[in-house]
Length: 261
Image 1 (tube, rainbow, N blue to C red):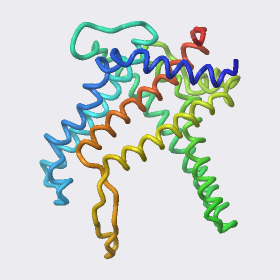
Image 2 (image 1 turned 30 degrees about the vertical axis):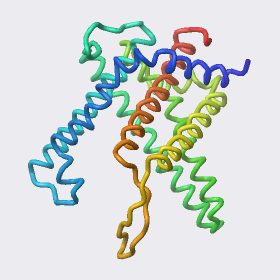
Image 3 (image 1 turned 90 degrees about the vertical axis):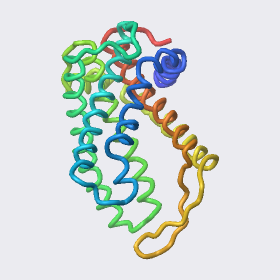
């Protein structure tokens, strides 16, 4: 059976076969930054006012809460899948050293992806400038997004490694995923297409049209209602779980030698 299909199937089974456990481990942490935004910094910004010093501090605290909460949730999810660690409380077990290590690796991964994106964007700009083609720009733009996702998947094995207390370098992650580098594209493409269709469906079903002023011109824009924002938030949560599961599955299979279902 094709490795890409096996990988896709295993990731889907890993997420949706453990959705209750995933909700218990990660959902509260995933929602924490949104609640903090409303309580600490959302009012002035969403109302269009210039934020006061207190609001700026509030927004800074929201960012800190988001970073800690997301890294904590990711560590918990990786450790549940790889070590079957669940915990007994409302929140997953707090492991400060693993959360700190995870943040450090995530920062490096994001930095590498940003640098790759800058280089690819320059090349894309040159190609589009020469061809003067909107179609070429769209195709290359889609390819750029997919390519950056592929790079993140190739080097992202450092994240589950950090979660379980193992040291792995970016180069080691790149090397261990080399034999299956082309097969990784299948789940990435499928996940991107499914996410795009779901997001557009949510916008269609739960959206409303409002008139906004952009550069002095009135334009109709489709925005989500409150129920739509809630649904979209849940969809985003599942999407994050899927991305984490992809890296966890690759780590378990390529590093630990686990079989794919």
